[in-house]
Image (cartoon, rainbow, N blue to C red):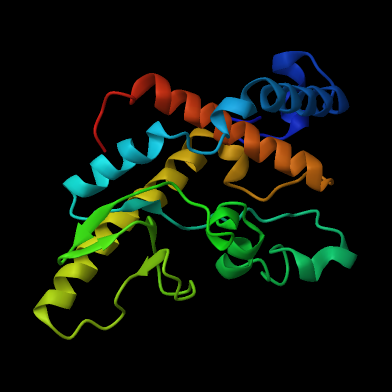
Length: 219
């Protein structure tokens, strides 16, 4: 069900499980994976992680860059009517900006807490890392947005490099959806906690695959 996105009743003959039993074990499996491995595979970056990320970013011309920022939307097919305006299933009110507001990623930045980073650009020294983002995000010091209408050769080169590097996060979402088809189609569970558990499980398992197969490769 996680890998192929199939419904619970389609597994009756193959697994010899009823629909309700298959759903129950899916929920149990996701909760156990999150409890056992979430502390490691969903952790915040440790002191060694920023230096590894900065090394890769510096090789591609972006000193001080910690990564790319983007969002992946998962439609909630069974979203209750009373919650319709709060979720993307109907009103799509959870756009990238609202997701950013709810995200824990920038809590430390808002509280002026960030990894100690030092780098020099055009002779100026900086000590705050940043993320690459597209045009929908606000103009924050921690976000470097693409230039929508570059009118000089220098701006066109920057826009080309910035957009090329931002493709990494979009490819990451594409690989996640390709590996775990359950998040590619509409979510059919009824509870928010179950949806969160399924998504976190897919991310954990995907991070396990990346760690096992691509740890020594330079991205």
